[in-house]
Length: 454
Image 1 (cartoon, helix red, strand yellow):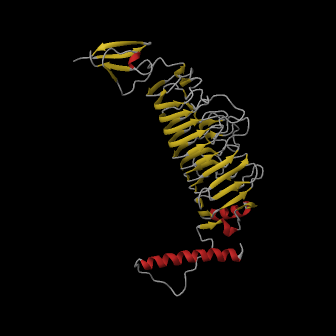
Image 2: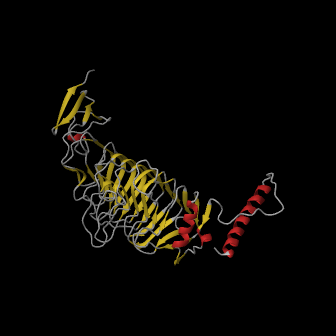
Image 3: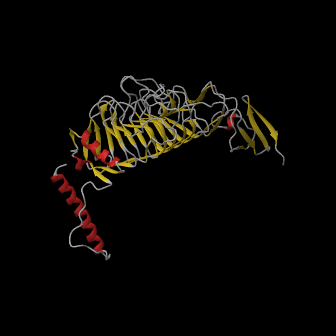
């Protein structure tokens, strides 16, 4: 690095320390100061400013090698790689990512997620934060790393923005991603990690594709044993909190077993998130396949406002098939375009109960199918409470002949029938006639009652 850059950095740090000392003195703090201003070495032992390694950040200079040098320096013992305000052009080369996190305990942090931006200069992977390979002990995983207040711009290229293969105990906070023509975050054998306020905008699969969601959590990305992206382990204990995904075409968040039928994704939690697009091409906004266990989504907004140019086929917005999982407090909506086939495609496997509570469709245009569509292959049970669409059919497919009873009983002042409900309930629904003190149960489309003891 040039001596002028070192001098500028040292000057900034000395000014910062001098200001801190002056402020403490003004507050009356007891301070012992030597005869000279304390010197701070450029690129301290745990702080690696990419500009001190020669990165320019003007959006046109190739900063790949300089940024990678800062990351590699941090890999020796861990620390923070800092990106001041700027656009850092980095270029993948074929199957080689533009940047790779090459050690553990590394934090990539920017001045702000839109002020400090990594810009992809060619097709390929922008950032690899992956371990050495499949390892169910985690010993060779990439671990205890993070990305904070940093932006990723795909620059309308294909390839991933962030690869998380064989990775665990990481977090991603206040990260902004945009303009990628592919999956943005792809994760395989990824454990015990958190996303907070992740924003992905204007990113979708290539033209004609229907299987390139913004985020794909999968046990394996290839069926070829031993190949990069293959695992016999799983995705587990991943949390999304307060995230926003907009203007996607080929799905927002998918959680699946992947190409090889091994193991089960489990322990995925999605809370207070928004999935909104008026660029729909194909594929559900949210997909949880039947291999998944213990997936819970709550306080979710899913909107399909319109189609991408050249597309017009209504889509299922949520595909929900996880075991021991729940979908709660969800609003599904559209506008004046018939973008929605069914609000939720729901499946229950053998011995499982599909749980949906307060999943409401607020439809400007009614679904071409129904609000809920029950998969014919379901062999399990269903617990459906207060789930309805504002217009159109309420339930379709193979409507279950049994419905796991919920904790709530409707109280009706008089004989109970389908007309006692705003929408026809499923078999297994119970209600109490408070006048005659009778308990009614819907069986085979008819209501049966028994007298309650006084």
